[in-house]
Length: 317
Length: 323
Image 1 (cartoon, rainbow over the protein chains, first blue to last red):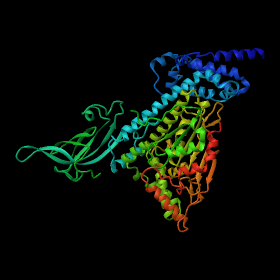
Image 2: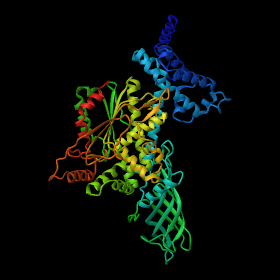
Image 3: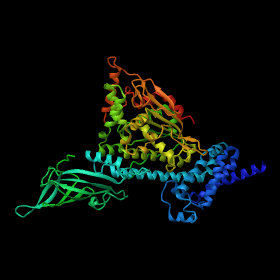
Image 4: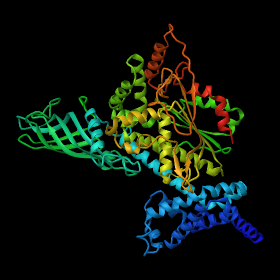
């Protein structure tokens, strides 16, 4: 019993050495060792056999995967599903990489932190002062901080992307587009947010523009500007790059946050406020960058058409 | 500039409280009187508590403008109306509920608000850590009202289901002292959304629809469920339609009754006009609906957040300061 007590106090003293290691030097193996130290401190009678067995299995798993030396940064990346660097993978035993995949490692790390914050931590609270516990659990707490920072950054990135897609600078949807995008979310893969909550970059475009601009030869063979009513049916794709929408005067063309492409229709004859979907309408294609678009319709009255989101006459829909 | 950066502050102790508002387009500062009210209830102890308030009006505005969300809620309102007796009060209550459940149909809106709630919770825990208080020693309380209850329920369920959020009660040791729902529409939303079935995009990502309604939890070190809060409280009023009551009658399909929650049903009173309480309630709710902004804080409104706070002042004090 004295030997056991001596070992326990030794473990405790070791755990409480001031500034045992800077956070960046903590490793996965170091966390496992701290939890084993914790088991020694509280005694096996304070925790269930299930927990003790679980910790032993995890220790064996990490050792066999040669993952003991993974840094906390690497582990936090694994936990938050960031891509693991080549260097990180290279540190694992190449023979075992396929067997010990990232999901398996993620689940094991989660299991390890669950052991850390379970009955073991509760028992330590009874045995140690808060300061002693903080010192012993410094690697566990550092990992928790890193995971929180990455998770917060991920949620911030989601909000940034949602603002690009839905914020004040994004194209407003008309009633037809609301309905089509709603139906697409119900039936078409790719129109829903990702499993981890990021917005899809895709959006259906179905719009009628009352006053696009084209040019045509007049009777006097002069090239004259004319208004033309058009309709677009296409797919808008948002770019969520960090710099999109930022820049000088030509940012909408050079670096917009969204572009679209699709079918383009013009009324049979040039003129504002006419129906582009009636018999005899001209069809073609369009490309939009930011708030600008250019379209081309084929046929006997082929036209190159320019337009912007803002219309001289208001949209009908 | 970050999009909707979370509120951050220096902790003076190990206690923090997060408020999450509900119906209405509340802007930062609109609910300052409510925080003042709780500070007054807590007395001098309030000085040591970090108070956070999550405003998500910006997200509401994005979606209201871009998707004209009102167009989508009609089927929901019709379903709720069909569950109630015919009459003007039923119509008003159905409209009131429609305000609560519109995010259900817009999956991006749900995900965006969830990200905002999670981001704020993560910032709170990080603020505590920065002050030297690890999650095991943090005393956190979340007070949500109305639609805020839904967003909090979903965010905490997501945190419990996904250890990558760093907020798991078992995997990260983040366990709230108190999770307080006031006038929760979680059951109402669950019922209405289940009735809509396949019309709800990505309904499998809505925890209160795709899974049984329970206090969020995560498997612990021996497989046992570790609840997201030591204490979960549900408070509603017997005249509050959002909280699951139709004129003093509890509606099982609308009243949230989580296994293990502490339930409080406030006996609300109306200053009736001409002796007709139903007409009075109808007028009050209609008035609240017509208010285009943060919900008006009037003593008569059975859904009023401040009235819930006032009626449970002593409870709140004992719960928040318990440890």
